[in-house]
Length: 456
Image 1 (tube, one colour):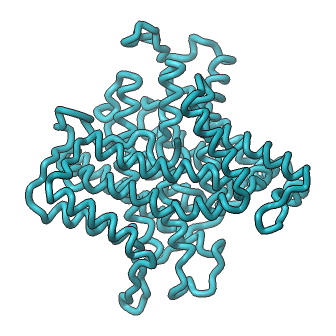
Image 2 (cartoon, one colour):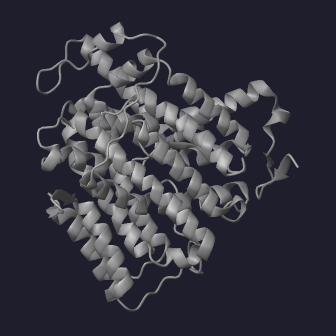
Image 3 (cartoon, helix red, strand yellow):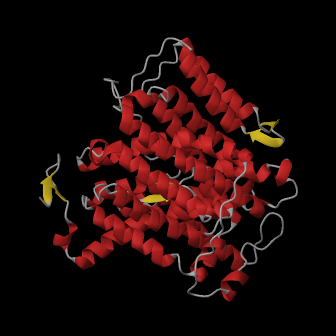
């Protein structure tokens, strides 16, 4: 059946072919714009290639749909959860990392993401064998909620540093995003990040033409690379490199992103009134997400994750056909073959990124708080209070991590890695568990991370 009446009496379109190809192409374009702002922000912040990122997002989405039996209307874009890991890897100065530039350290961060993606495959296999409830009891909201809060807090300093390059530009970006989220309607409310970037970019151009400079006296824009770039060209692939220190930094972050994935699948299921956790099955969607993430990182792209923005588009348009999402993926692939477009994106001033990050990183922590609240974590329970407290103190306290030697190789555990390990161990050891996955009768029926830690 191609149409189905929703709870509000509006027919939902499940087969977009009845709308005609032109409308399907427009709907696909809408989904591309919804994911675009957040997806390109990750390579801009980390130094990865925008072209490679767009290609990996498009190919990863198509691969996800293939492994999910073409049933789930989800788009896979860049994950913000690993930004803290990128920062930590760039800061490494021990062992082989001594003397390397930040650009030379990026392939090692990608190598860690490859391993993180493989953890999805391991969890998918375990879920297939033992069932989702048995696995999720080791990762309750009292562990994952504080971990997501911690990810946002650990990035706060970076947002302030970038914004301080030019505060007026940063504040314009922040104001546009807030205004779109609070007062925007329709597409405006779905693409606040993109509008924030575009609006503050135009404001920065006006300042630049008026002779205004950044706080340090440097020019706001430099279009030299854009002038020299080609309109069409292959994405620059960079093969991932592997080091145990980088792996131990990036891999634990998969704990949060896997929980986010589970929440997003629940959110999409509720939006379109289909149980995707049951069919095609959570193990299949995790498999698609994990393989897409590992393959992206293997060629120098960021981790992929299912995007809540596109779930919002589903709710707005009531067109639930996954084929429309695949059209958006094809758009992303086409744009990835334009170096000029990538260089134009790279010309975005640091202050614009800072203003966007101000909201973005705060939202990461806010989503963690929301997760704790929606899952009714009882902080009058001393056990829960201890676990959350230890996670936050370890993550924020071990600013330089812990470095030790294993068989002659220097290994560094970051604050995030230490916090994840401590949280999981304390949850397993301390008695008095008060949460069972899928059986919270008062609130969310599953771990709820929809909206996640990569977008507003």
